[in-house]
Amino acid sequence: MFTTSNLIIRPLNKTELTNYAISVKDFAESIGLFSHKSIIDINEKEAIQNDLLPNFGNDEYNNLFFTIWIVIEKQSMFIIGSFCFHGTPNNIGEIEVGYGIDKEFQNKGYATELVERIINWAKTQDNITSIIGITEGKNIASIKVLQKNSFELTESSENLKYTYKLK
Image (cartoon, rainbow, N blue to C red; front, top):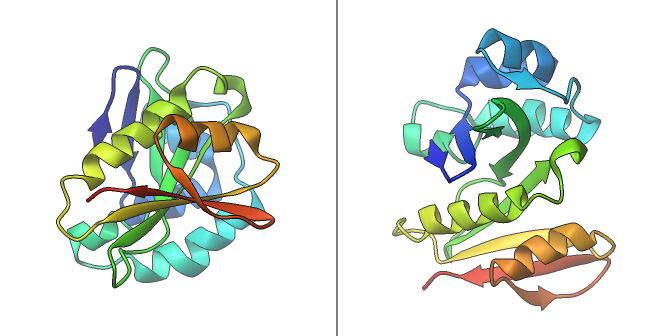
């Protein structure tokens, strides 16, 4: 679990991940939280079912890379978004992250705060050398989050690839 001044960022265990995929709203209520987001989109649901759950195993460290991390606003105790790693670090130590903040909570600096905390954690890991963020070229908000966290544009196409070098 990570914390920031405004956020609690908590990984889900396998049972929680399964319940989250069924209904974010029901899952939130089951653990004493609130959620504006009552459904997850088809891409997130497919990623949970096809990528995360099948790779969620007995290794607690690796499980951090195969789950959804919920983002909780401390003041309201609402689940306001999520992030995940796209698998374990590759053979050169790169890790890709994906994140999202619900519309009701955007433009408050939460995504920037979330990514900053992920960077701080990654800096403590021996096997991670870079963090990759890939976003659509038209997703200006996500581009700004990456730029505010010192990511540099390393590949340009329809989807932009930004990289943060840790070492």
